Image (tube, rainbow over all chains, first blue to last red; front, side, top):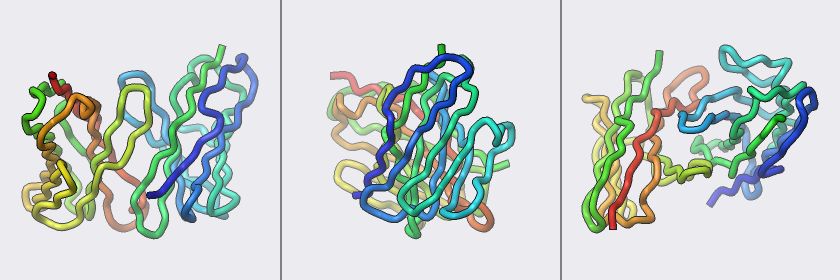
Length: 114
Length: 113
């Protein structure tokens, strides 16, 4: 089946620093990748959709200058949380889909901002 | 506004019973539906998807879709304690942004040994 990896699986950083999270599709070419955020006991919240080679489309309320997304290849997308603050602490999950449209999720990245 | 509604649960069933998870959606343009399972602290994993009206079976899982009633369900036969998780229903529409999924808030299932 389709495998999506994320790195790192967890990260702790100081307030004000930037954190980069990588999302890779390992055995298929992902034309579209999605970034979600999930707070404890809450549902998935879509942050942005990115297509390879194009600018990401952000959901309403998500600051594009704070959450930088790059989808440079068909197997890699990165999310950079810039100037992270404690309220950015969350579970960040990417998913990837190919022409078949089914989304496969990565294992997620837990971010804790101190 | 596209919405997918699920009962939050928890839904408790005894081991070996059938668990029935339900989902309704508001967007009549939705073309396909997906069921994901999410264990606590983990990311969602795909169980199955369904495009056509009727039933689709995969092992112990059966997805049912009724587009006229805008209703999707997932049946889990011979429920096991390892099935205890939150089940997310998601719909995918058509047209612009159609690759996006609209997720329900999930139903928490507890299978009691």
